[in-house]
Image 1 (tube, rainbow, N blue to C red):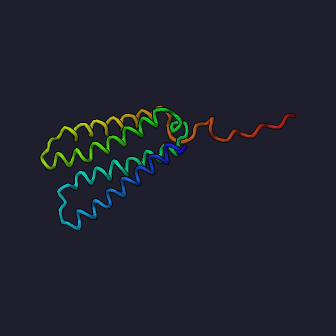
Image 2: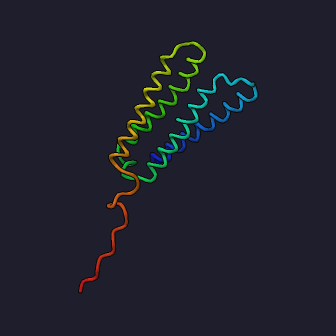
Image 3: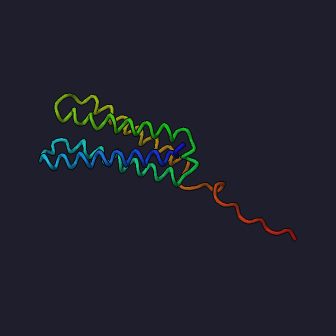
Length: 137
């Protein structure tokens, strides 16, 4: 099974690829109307997910906790709801989906705050190499 850090990085890279293709499409058509949605896809979908992935890679105790998987699912859902929600809002089809996506994004960041405060950053003293035992005299 892949580590949670790999899932964050892999999903973030996929969102980045989608954002890049979308950016090229906007440039080619000279229509940047949906650039706020494109920006959120890149910012939350790639930047935030990569930061989260780096944190979990550096902090194995946090990565092993069940809340890491919940965090991954929530931030992925936030991107998948918020990005099209912004498109709907820009095109005058309502803001409800964007609002829901925004709430999911805020909740995912709140979980990250909780995880960082609970587990700190990096390996704990218990996970670091044990000091060498002193020889008996």
